[in-house]
Image 1 (cartoon, one colour):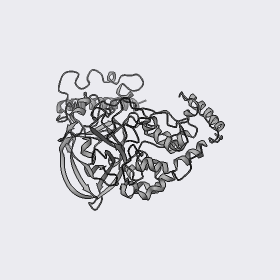
Image 2 (cartoon, one colour):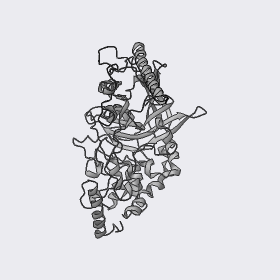
Image 3 (cartoon, one colour):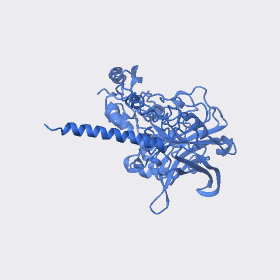
Image 4 (tube, one colour):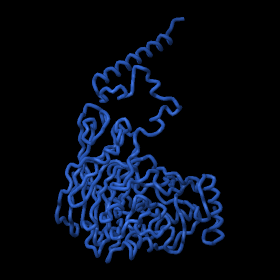
Length: 511
């Protein structure tokens, strides 16, 4: 791909080549709008060296939007633990007991938090003599067969110039929705999800538990920006993976400084105790993609340990971004001129007249104007497509932030009109219409192994008449019932012994 995109003929030549590549992959394309080089992997999944080895503390995505069914409230969603394989037991996915999961609210634009919602968790085990997460079908959050459970508290900290003014416990021992082990273990997971939605005093609502990862993207971007020739686009590679989610819905008046100043800045952090017993911040997230692809390797861990009021140290990463240079090197599309002050305005200050607070101090926060009503039919490109209720005015679950951020980074706001993206335009699962809005997590029993061996053979037909699936006879379904366990163990031992004896006598039969 050698034509230069600065000339009209060059753009048409590139488009023609890309159309062919996309057509070969079965993707629709039309003119230059077909160009699909991406800019990032999942929003903040494994984005820095240290946090990539600590998934329980890894904040993957942050969302903030005026609640579509309750526009007098704002919903904030913070996700953790990337790439949860649904069948990844027997130790399924929990929040860390030794962490503080914090949601920060800056309601005056000074890059400091005035409100902090702190989630802390505690894990409970009913039976430590079994390896099982659940010992039978789970029908409620207090079901005795749910062996591993978690509860959490929420403390509201009010601050002034980062000094504590007050601390109030607003939630105490609220149950967490468990990991979705499978259809046999959790036959009605939606019921468990509903039981984990908890109303707080003052019109707020909270939820903590597992959810389908709402971020949608093609992660093959790291293979030289989709294979170096756009042969690797259009596949939502996050499909089927789950995350652990915190969702908090609060009245707008509760978080903004006044009706005359309705803009808030939001970011989330995780702290854990170090070897000396001191709390240390290990994860931070505001806008998507920032630490993923804006910050170079040398700054990633430092950013995760930093605070917005010190973001001046990372300014050069925004004004001189690496992504446009990579796209120019691989796809010959001219990078916009630097310094990129347009990116500072959008991602560090907010859009003037939309979500930029007065006297704003540039900082990496997700900024939301809580006075803008939800859109009846949200557009995936948000503000870029005239939908001011979407990204970068906050972030909704349906916002295609990868495409939006890429188009802005490639100069959409400075005259370089483009329609770039990764050809993944929506999540594979539909989001809910009410709090917590997240799609239910993928079940551990999904996939070919849940149906048979993958060759069309039903596994149950191999069990024979002596072994029946749990619950088929109407008897006790508890998996660890001693009599059932003894019976199954006896059958397995006898079968193993017969098999070994036959093999031995066959192998060592005298001549």
